Amino acid sequence: RIVAVIMVGGPTKGTRFRPLSLNIPKPLFPLAGQAMVHHPISACKRIPNLAQIYLIGFYEEREFALFVSSVSNELRVPVRYLKEDKPHGSAGGLYNFRDLIMEDNPSHIVLLNCDVCCSFPLPDMLEAHRRYGGMGTILVIKVSPESAYQFGELVADPVTNELLHYAEKPETFVSDRINCGVYIFTPDIFTAIQGVSTQRKDRATLRRVSSFEALQPANRSLPTDFVRLDQDILSPLTGKKQLYVYETMDFWEQIKNPGMSLKSSGLYLAQFRFTSPHLLASGDGTKNATITGDVFIHPSAKVHPTAKIGPNVSISANARIGAGVRLVSCIILDDVEIQENAVVIHAIIGWKSSIGRWSRVQASGDYNAKLGVTILGESVTVEDEVVVINSIVLPNKTLNVSVQEEIIL
Ligand code: GDD
Image (cartoon, rainbow, N blue to C red; front, side):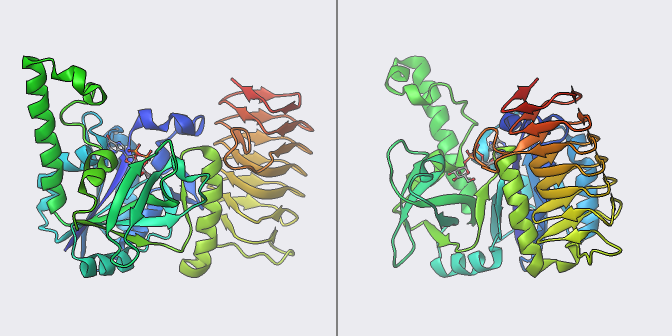
């Protein structure tokens, strides 16, 4: 049997996701019409003999209660949210719930970061993991050498796929192969985490009786039960025939800011063509709006037949899209109203916002730039004929003049 664990983090981790994380936990933000964490959960469904999916985080339990019960019903797989009393790090959080996880007596634990967007090739990874015979297998991807420093960089044996070297976000270039935050472990991972924790406790005792701390400044502030998977577990286990890599040739992105959520939404919409074509809108331009490329429209949304929509557009529940509206590369959240002839390009429009007639909400579409995607927080009003370009607008603001390259607080 197999247990899957998705690390969802907590409120302090979502700050780069503002103003969108002011309303809901980042893992529940909709990409292609489904919560960010819904995508790895549906990927776990494809694992044979899956017993349970746990989400581990330090958000309040009530924030996940509704999602967890509806996704369990929808996918017919038991999903449970487990709350940490405080952050224990990506490995410490897992270790915290080891007794519960081991209740199902799993042969393998699938461990996933919630903030990555990929095809999650879990059955193939499991097969490779069994072949390698190690304690863990890490999903890796080749990225451009210029972007690798943002991730865990690693070197593996090209023949055996054994992990030989690991450097977490290094200052100088190590490798263009990076850690995707998708893992398969045997339950021995708990022994490895326990080892680091015990070592920390011993050091803490030593510190109290000597001046040892001066020699280990890097470890000074870490509590003994705080264990990071990358630095504390993966790094020390390299070159010991315990860890292996599985390289994906598919898409992969990390979702740390709203711009990347728009890009990821497009990647998931494109994947729906193969996995869930029924979720994609189709339009013939007469009764329905004209649809170009991959578009998701929630059944409760009302879209005028003269609107032109796509590619990469996702429209959430109860949104109203008026006559002559043009939407390109955007996420329209619940209860938004877009009035006649408005244009929205490379933008995320927050819950209950309203965009007036002939207005434009637009950006350059550079997903990594701070203002490359225009974001409107909850309940923002853009009045008629107002132009908003490359800007971020915090909740409850009304814009009656045009703005460009601005953060409106
Ligand atoms: N429950 C819980 N508790 N979750 C946590 C905690 C914690 O204390 N700390 C982090 N997480 C979750 C985050 O929500 C995220 O899903 C995952 O664990 C990893 O977060 P970080 O430890 O902050 O690392 P990162 O996202 O900057 O980088 C990691 O992921 C990259 C891939 O996206 C590293 O493993 C990199 O090497 C890797 O490239």
